[in-house]
Length: 90
Image (cartoon, rainbow, N blue to C red):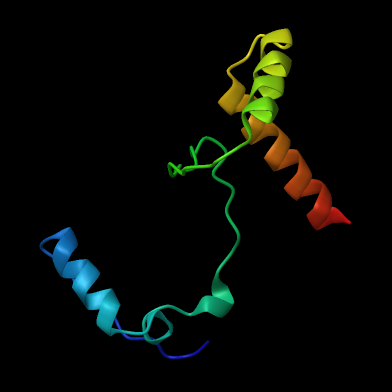
């Protein structure tokens, strides 16, 4: 096991953030001992984007979404997620 430094106690989150911005975590944590952890109920953060689509395409997407009784934005996200997953597994 490599020798690691003790992590200091922080009074605030801002103080801790400033510390980690200036220090390498490998000086304080033995990453060889790290284990993977599953956090199944963690909701991924989202980011709003602007996407320009031809009106006809958007109308077709809305019709498909209506057939599936779901919002068209949700259908677009589902299609994108499926395509990316399929591409990464190829």
